[in-house]
Every structure is written in structure tokens, then in C-alpha cells.
Image 1 (tube, helix red, strand yellow):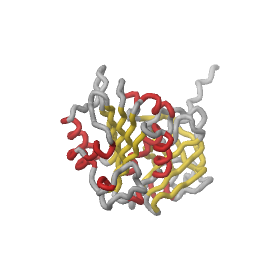
Image 2 (image 1 turned 135 degrees about the vertical axis):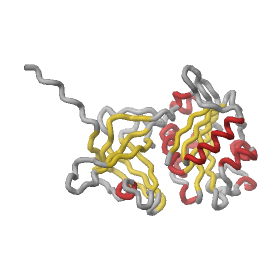
Image 3 (image 1 turned 30 degrees about the horizontal axis):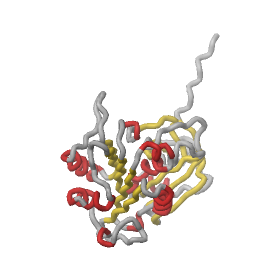
Image 4 (image 1 turned 60 degrees about the vertical axis):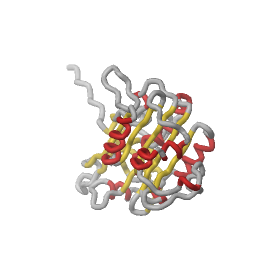
Length: 271
């Protein structure tokens, strides 16, 4: 009698290879081994699992979605997270150390990818907090720089200490001088030119993304106009920010794509 085929496992057990703490007890990154055959497009996310039941240490019973920070070509997978106080998942995730187990679902999800756009010369990547994750994957992928003439990365945080991956982003800006602009934005304290060397001293004041967009200062800081005919814009982060920015951008001629009609705006809540 022919035996029925064995179903492929929905997830695999992987191993933490590196932990980076950006802000103690608040922001961290984990790098883990990559499952064989695991494929994704920059901007997509995976479901990570933890075995939190002490009676079943090899069965993940809590799952959360995290965007890949790593490029599709990297041998390992990297994830960036904030610790949610009293949360069920992120505090134990932050406690993982090199050699510990982390489960990864074999499927990938999400549509915040460059495939959402047709054409366009300028790419604007606007994020708050850990919404930066998806954009890091895009900027680590050489294909992104082959497609767009100008790329502007805007990262909004409360305090400058929360500007994770800043050194890498400044290095990328030097590597792609004249093509990539990195704009950190702080809301609770002024910036310094060391944090954002592309800015003039008059553009270092704190501000919210919505305020900077309304006033035109966001474009002034970038040195590039938000022209809906050639700009393609992504929003990722706090749901309130995404909602407010989407409304403001709609008035400027930006809209998400719909069936059969590509748009110039892509959004995703990251909370």
C-alpha cells in the first residue's frame, strides 16, 4: 500500500548567532541561522516562535511577525525589535543569547516591497522606530540602488540614542554619495551634525514627520521635492503616524495601488 506523503514541517528550529543591544531593555537585534531554502523579498516579514511553556521546551507556542533586516543574499537572518513592557513575546525574545533556539515559520508574508511600484526615479523610505527594519533589507540589497536615481531614508525616533543602525546607514550614504540621503528625525531633542552630517545647522531642530511634511522642511532637509509623478514612497511604523502621513500625502497626489493600477505609495503598520 502506498504511504501518503509526509507533510513538510511548518517551521524550523534555528540558533541565535549574535545579539546586539541598541538601548538597554528597549531596543535590540538578533541574528540567527537561516533555514535551508528560506527565500524572501526585501520588505517581507517572517513569523518567529518561542517555546514559552516549560513543560514543552521544543514546541513553540507564541508567534510574532518581524521583518527581515538582512538582505536576501545573506547567509543568516537578522531581526530588529523593541521590548514591549509586560509583553508576552518581546521580553523573552530579548533575553535570548548566542546558542539559544528560535523557531521560524517557513512562509514569508507582506507586500511592503519595491514590487509594489512601477517606474519612478526617487524612492522615499519613511519609518518610525523599528519600522526601519524593512528598509534596512532593501538598502542592503544592491538591486535597490540600480533601480532608483535618488533614495531618501527618513527615520523618526524620540531620542537620538534610539537611532539604531546609524553607523551602517552613514557608511551606506558615503558609499552611495549623491544617491542615498539618510535623515534621522528626533522629536524630543535636537539633532547634531555628527548624527546627521547631511543637514545644515538650521535643520537640526526636533520635529514630527507630519509637521516637517506640512511645512515643507522634510523636502528641504532631503534636498529633493516630493513629486508624485516620479517619487515612490513607503510608510512603515506607528499606526497613528502612518494614518496621518497617508492623509497628508493623499492631498499631494500619492495613493496606494489597486487592482491592475500601480500606485506611488505603499504602507504598513509596524507596532
